[in-house]
Image (cartoon, rainbow, N blue to C red; front, top):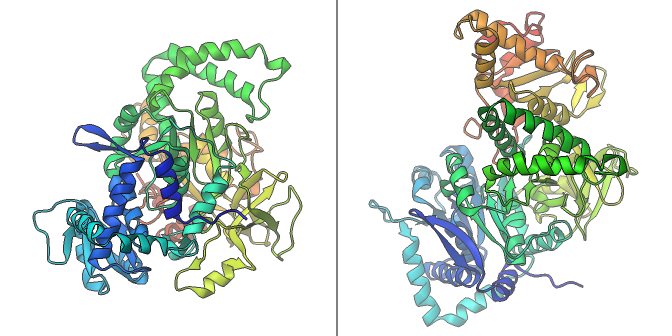
Length: 630
């Protein structure tokens, strides 16, 4: 039987093996600094010992609210070395019930935070009486009595290690593989937050499983754009990288505006991202190409078309009758795509993509320009990786090869196992399955049955290796006659193929027809209006009517006679459209930290718009509600 490592065993093993390698990159002032594996462990020791000196007992919970930085990683390791449980929180949470609930529900005794997030913690302390001390990563001028600077913790740790070295060793050696490492709260897309209990072994097992699908090199540099509070960043990011001796950086301040400069400074070979960010990169590339002139745009489009036709779904690219395309593709790559790749530093080998559903056209695009986006699938309850494509084995459009060792089966609504090719609920069993939901035995029992995690996602197995995820098993469109259909692929396709639709979700809950909640791309619509209807005043009702009709034409392209006709059954296409005045964001709670739309929130906010869409007047896209969106 394979050794069941704790995260501490794991860190001890790989910081010894790669002691002199760079593990962390961080911008300090104007300079990017390096922290080695040995330095990372030494700093984690000091913080862990300092937390023990502060009074942290084994099993104590520590809420953790900070933007990505070195101290995020080292601080979490310190908590784990002290035998504590980290409760990572999203910096996008406001000082509302969302933040209060997590800190209180987790029974956190301590909170670790940065100066930029401190005000949120101060505001909720009256409602979180169990919190004894707030540890701040930055020196602040107005430090309060219950606050302590991390530098003081480190000094306390240095003294503790001198005076009680064996106590520290005994503490971290007392941590077992089944002890909790994290309580990872997820907003989900369909339910209220739950505290997912992830053990030390959940993490190390999933890293071992990830090795069956993810390959890194010792000289790889990863840029993690995702927030570090999610276990995807832990496993696909720093723990897997640690096992290969690689390094990584985060974006300073978690700010989108810092991504371009970070990319150029780090020149990553790998990037941990999500589909929405990949779409933004693509839009930026295309904007740059348009600015370069008609010739550059022609070469770019011609090269793309040629490469996409040659690559097909990746695993089946090329062939005898396609051989003539190779030298032309190489030429376009040298003249055009190599320059496009400079937009992500010029050294990228591939993206690691989170989120199971990624439009195949987007995958084909990145494959064509020489930066494959290797899509995978997982969820926090599985710590999180369940499957992934790799450079060695991939099928564009799939969710990749299932990790090993892990069992998987597809079940119908009656719990019957389905054969290859048939869609049902994805269920898995393995050491990566969570220990349960914190203080929620009912949800735990409903989700884990006889050791099998019921994911709530719908998919099918192509064969014993490749998984296809097609949507939420419990989030289906349901027609008035009871027929069910998963909406995600339609949503992804429309938003990806249209320059004028930024995002959308479909709704049908035994209603007469399907409707769409559409976030328009206002900038592109304004540009189209200026080009095609220059005489129209952008603020006039006439202009708004034209832009609404343009959105309708984009959706109608999927109907008979349209450019995308036949892609999906017409009965599931939206018969009415609600055009929304603002995008789905984390701030308005319509998007979670994994950049997925929280449907229940969006549907609650726009309940009146949706009700109107089911009236005769609402079926016409040019209506009073939609006109107000511009």
